[in-house]
Amino acid sequence: MDIHSFIFLLMEMAGTIAFAASGAMVAIHRHMDAFGVCVLGVITAVGGGMTRDVVLGKVPAALRDPLYVIVAAAASVIVFCIFYFRQDLFKGKTGEWYERIMLIMDSIGLGIFTAFGVKTGIDAGYLDNTFLLAFVGTVTGVGGGLLRDMMAGVPPYIFVRHVYACASIGGAVVCIYMYRFWGELPAMVISAGVVMLIRYLAAHYRWNLPRIERDE
Image (tube, rainbow, N blue to C red; front, side, top):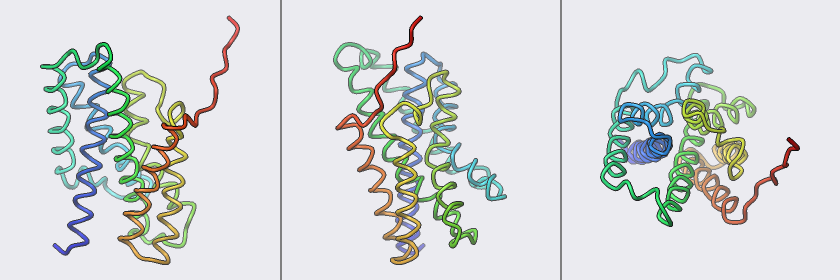
């Protein structure tokens, strides 16, 4: 394994763990049991990639290599155990950490998987198709979280929180053009960082549309 492949593997594992942890935390917050926590964690981690592969006409990578599912399940179990033995973490002021950790985990996973979605599209031979690459990059980034929220019965994160999908789209576009001019590794690393930065700034400065109160 060369250094580039090793870096990419580390990035994929980091994204898988981050998304699995966010899925597990949503499941715990919704009072699911251990199995539900594992299912939601795995779906969050691999759901976007599986959707991307279906769009590209490929057998999903998560089915060809169970490593991603195993890592996601293990991360979900660890999160479940932490919150099982520390049930006070969602109570009082410590409950504020839930939103902070969710933001961090989702930002890491979103940035990494958006970049890998673009890379997968390029590897499939679509380097010149900017729209398709941006689409599969965004689907890879937000697809798992969308499935997670639908299964948990909560408003999808991509529609209500911190410029979520827009950050993924922006990162995908950055990755595409940097890949064409600077190569694979710089494009992957910088675009993932761009997504995380947009998510941080959006959360810090509250870049959300105001809620419209409806008359009952």
